[in-house]
Image (cartoon, rainbow, N blue to C red; front, side, top):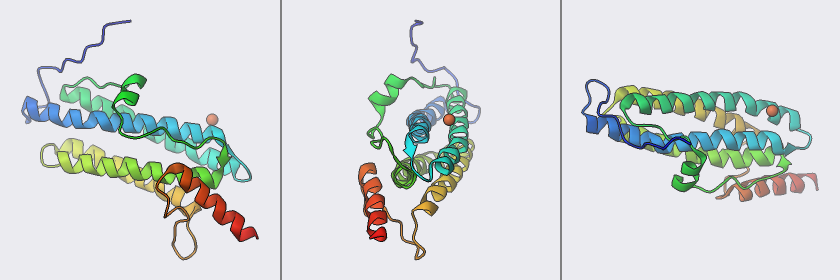
Amino acid sequence: MAKKSTKNANYTVPGLTTEQGHGVAEILQQRLHALNDLQLTLKHAHWNVVGPNFISVHEMLDPQIEEVRGYVDELAERMATLGVPPNGLPGAIVAERTWDDYDVQRASGVEHLAALDLVYDGVITDHRDALARISDVDPITEDMLIAQVRGLELFQWFMRSHIESDSGVLENSAARTEKDAAKAVKRGRIAKKK
Ligand SMILES: [Fe+2]
């Protein structure tokens, strides 16, 4: 295997100092890990959903995965444009991420959607935080992240619409972990049947 180089380029985009451009790209590295992790997690849910809503949830997830994979590519190429080599390797994701693996396996559609709602919470919050940190320095990268947040928030709304009551309350609103979110929805649905 080729020796991995982590050395930054000696340039960045015109109009930014090298330090500014590389600083922005370094903030993007963690966003690259988050989006790579998200597209894998969404595929995992696509494969592990069971029950009466199988086909609607299974098929709803694939266009999201395609879109997120597009974000991954766009973001990695922005890092390279800014002069910092993007790291898309699985070992780096696991070593550098600040979150745990998604912890729902075989489960119903609403259970996965309730858990994925929490996953989206984390990715979107951190994307917005990265936006706030780079917005004064690089409006071009800011523009890319704004578009990605808009897409991610739309997808999160798709998930939430499945677990929202007609009074506007999310069934997973008290949950702090994905497992608890899945359990809360399951409990709620069983209670309604009784
Ligand atoms: Fe598939």
